[in-house]
Image (tube, rainbow, N blue to C red; front, top):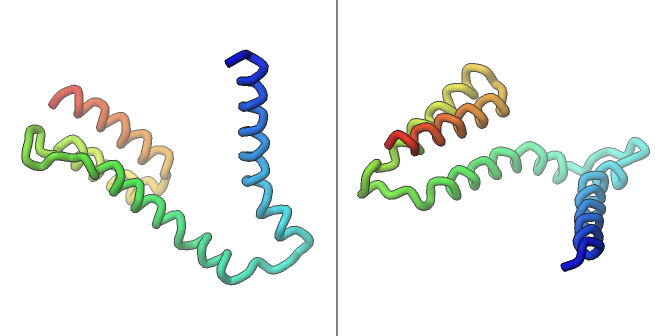
Length: 107
C-alpha cells in the first residue's frame, strides 16, 4: 500500500466518522422537536452499551482455573465503587483499567 493510498483511506474514514457525528445535529436543526423514539434511545442506549461491554469483557474469564476471575472481579468492583463515589466515568474506567493491569501482573 502506498502512502497516498493510506492517506486517502484515512481521509475517507475521517469524513465518514465526522458525518456520523454531525448527522443528528443536521437532521434536528432549526428548532425541530426531537422525536420521542430518539429521546428514549438516548436515555437507554448508554446503559445497554455498557452492559454489553461488561459481558464482552468477562466472556473469556475462567472460573475453574487460577486466578479464578479474581482480577476481573476486583477491578470490576473498584469501577462500580468509584463510580458510585465520584460519579466520574473517566476516573472510574481509567482506575479500573489500571488496577486490572496491575492485578493480572500480580496473579
